[in-house]
Length: 143
Image (cartoon, rainbow, N blue to C red; front, side):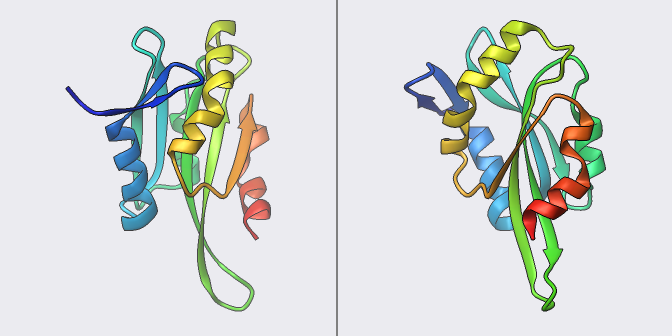
């Protein structure tokens, strides 16, 4: 059986694969983003999609379903005004208006626990439609 990290307050589990993928993104830079989903029956947070190092923020936003919730992390690389390369990790809580009430509640109540398991997140964005998580917002928050 695969290992998982239990989040005591919510009864949710984060799959070992989810944490491992996040660490690969954070330290090895092999992923640009990761989309996570919660299986409502097993209460397990699993990897739904992984974006390769060459993929963009637009690829991430295009991979989010229009009618279901997801968590995502995005590794934003940028160059500062004094020419230093930096990276900031964004946690995105995606809960579109068209998603079911039960899904919205499940994701809302487990968000903080999932963030605690994924150590090293710099910023959080909550969005119900793509305009609330535009790339300009990510750029502004990171600098």
